[in-house]
Length: 209
Image (cartoon, rainbow, N blue to C red; front, side, top):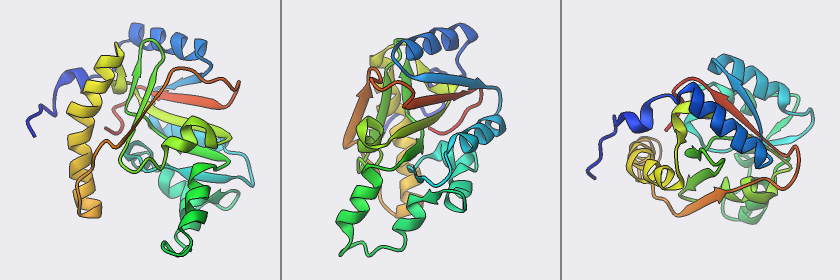
């Protein structure tokens, strides 16, 4: 697969002007936005945002993993980690129960592949495990995104996914699962109709793919 993985178009942190424009668009589209300088600040904010006693699904995400949120969520005691619960299920006989837990958690914590200056949010997935919860199923959605993922247009966002994110996810998937990845499900969120449901946590650091 011929692609330039170091292309600055997809790795360079967004300018202050682009960040401001994107935040304004996201908020106009019903998505609450907070901006942090560091991942440590973002991690603390996300954990504080999760209500006690809830079921939390941390969708597969390099960003969430690098920030240490995956480990902290899955070992938390004041709320229940869906992925920890899933590990106790039989993947054959309890497949439907597992699907329901992933599709409709109380809280979804994850990341996205691109955000446009019009406030469009793009999520790509091989299995679609995080797509249903993000679109509707989760009561609360929290996304953590490095500002290198901000793009100008929807077309730029799609190029970022296909030309940059996918080859890196191929490599990760081979190491973790022994198989390549693919873009089987692609969700574009133009706006959030339910006030207060979705929070976008932007971080001025290169995080994830």
